[in-house]
Length: 447
Image (cartoon, rainbow, N blue to C red):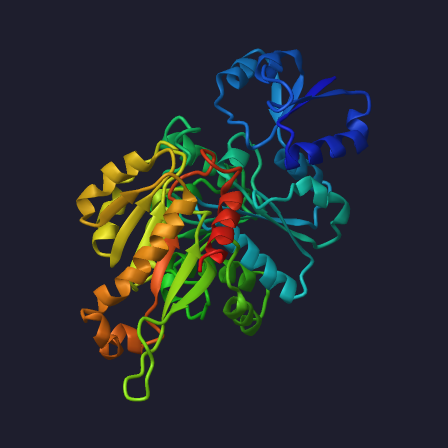
């Protein structure tokens, strides 16, 4: 058998390791097709009987579709994992998908289950290939898989427990249209059995639509009745919390343990992550005329790669804010940002990156001032300068009357610098994590 691994990043390397150890493939000829080592890698697909596609290679590429029509079979590390787990009937798979919130919900659920002494594992789109887990699994193990549309797109299996969060347009640069994106996501439910379960966001019509594809028990989740206290800002995180809690309770975790883990969970890196607080003292202190400092809070939301997640980030803060956005375009509509910005107490939008002009054109009717810069460093410095300048503007007082300003008298009224790009990172960075780390590095250098 002639086998190829298409894409040789983290998942591709895990797939190769697995194939070499598996007796089924001991006589197979295994090749690596990757653009880093061969610019013409896509032209060789028809030379193979079986190709394991990694999620970073779009399924809709003409070369892949041509190979499928010519009889080449395609699979993935995720499909391999499902096949292997069938042999271990006591292992339970929880698949979590959604346009955004997958990583937060998956990680929180994992932490809750571990605290409840469950033999839980976390893998998938969050950064670990599920096939790496196979040697570690035991009787009654629970595997939580964060599943993207790219992992679900050609998957012909569904998990024992499916979790469907909010669904809205994304990755329109890789999917043909939103309908195809929905069809890809629906694989998480489509192949479920009657004994399976599906938890879904009842407030999202597309989540409900996907849930109807399942033959399993349908469990709607409404976050509005959640009683949990969390350190994570934003209504969207309340939805993630409600979903993780519902699944954990279903699996037998005590309510008190669930509440404790949620209360202490601060979220994942690059997702509304508080990067730094800088306190600014705008006036001279004296015994007769004291003046409290004002904080400028920098939030790293680099994982926000579409307008809807940036909308959620903006809504998470009532305080006056400066938004930094822009990056590589994914064929998305930015007009929905306009109404949110209008009502959001946003004082300035700073744009950089490949699609800055597209965003600027889409949100110009918001009435919020827009400035465009060359790079992230310029954006951060401009945001910091503007935040310091805003302090007297927001107090409606001349500089020598700062102490009487309500915003200065309260340490609970910071100015927010929100880095929520609403776009992919590949125009200037390796990925969203690289972009987020760079943001934090630059913010630390501010004086």
